[in-house]
Image 1 (tube, chains in turn green, yellow):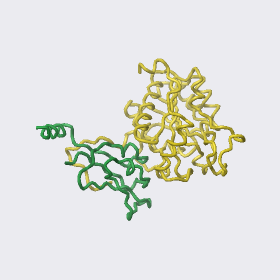
Image 2 (cartoon, chains in turn yellow, green; image 1 turned 90 degrees about the horizontal axis):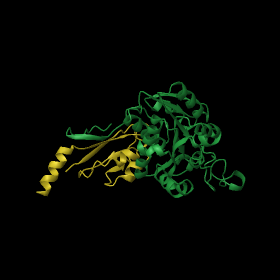
Image 3 (spheres, helix red, strand yellow; image 1 turned 60 degrees about the vertical axis):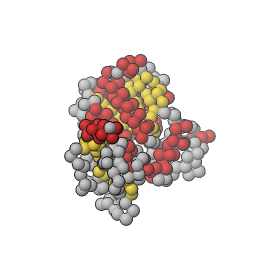
Image 4 (cartoon, helix red, strand yellow; image 1 turned 120 degrees about the horizontal axis):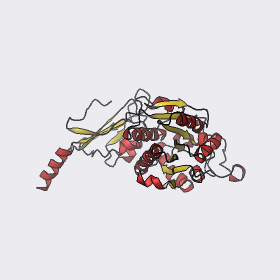
Length: 86
Length: 259
């Protein structure tokens, strides 16, 4: 179940790696074989199993404000929580 | 931008603040100036000050700060941001005047201006970025450089017998009666960044309430001139700068608790 998702502005990213070092779910990787327009290896959101919780620590530490964080709407999260407990 | 957009049932929980211009910055990768800019822009947004805020940019790496914020701004001579802010605030008292200064600007050439602004209790807010080095000019020794720290002008490490010990500006400014809110925070991890955001919000509220001079010192990194990787630079703040510059509240006006 996907709870969170982020988008990374690839052109603005300077490849400083701070987001990938703080991510508790390890769903942010640095693009080793890819360059952006500025010549940096940008950060990539790689989350095939839907592990991202939308905790936003990556966005809080990003010095270049590249990251937008989305989280599942509260209503649906509550419904899912009830379904799980029943 | 990623081509993959979030599904429509998802809420945005973190996005670009309105008061921060949507332009790339000239800061080096991993420089915490960007974090400080974002925190200040978020605080301006949350308090609804975008139309009232006037930013005074310094000389240093953040010399182009006026391009990075969607608020009115002007550029002061080196170290003179508090003097310019004093004039702005006295002539336009309804505005919220914020200076953004580095350690080379504020502690060295601008030491007199900041001290007298604090002593006079000017109703301005200063965001003080302390990274223990001169960033823009190529990594020379600053008054805040740590004992033994190697810089381009102290290649053998800072010798405190010849150049003295680091100046702790928050402790100095806390001595003045005119200072209402003087705190030091760090930007080396997420928990401390959240604390720094709260401190910036409080500092702006102090100015809105007219309690006196307010300053938030932020311990920042300079990966390029320290010569280490960005994440190592954050560790360096924690291990080396925090013992020398302990984060804390150095002056809190009694009325601040009621804000």
